[in-house]
Length: 254
Image (cartoon, rainbow, N blue to C red; front, side):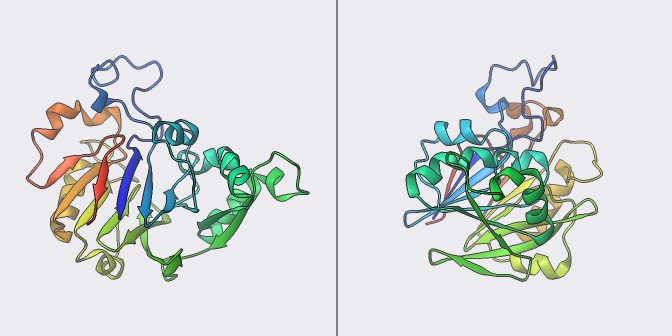
């Protein structure tokens, strides 16, 4: 089992349009981040987590030639708006793409992409929406997927656990009951937007507290904004076993 981080940036990506801060001007490739998304690969099955505005670029850069399913954490633009770009996978497979999301999120996708769900027109993407929630453990091509209920400020969204790997993005808080689903994982990917506090995202200090609570073998910080600081500087200050994630990072769960 392998998790590839296709993007590790916040909703604006890094660099940010029009920004001249040190991070946005950095020539270090570790400071250049597409919008957050990940690919879980297991025995030939490819499952995409979130389909943001950089989906096409991410698929080409990672040379992804097929997708079996898409898991959506929530309905914000930087996590769903790239769904139109799944059409080459439809053409290749000849089948609609299976997309898994909470009922609220599925309704939003139907609204935003209404043209997909009307009368079939050649060339348009095709999607089969499957409703899930934090209590809906599922299997995709034999792979166990455990949704985890988390809070993005006041918005209930989903994280996911795949055996030894847990992936949590856009989380601000998590209940003790849902935290139990995470305990025992060996590898954790969790968001931290910046150093200062934020209303709907963990900051770095909060993320490190959560990592200590879960105590994985290794943890990576994702969904990072330019306000976090230069990757080289921040990385040097992180505790052992915790790293800033970067685009293209591969986590091997063997």
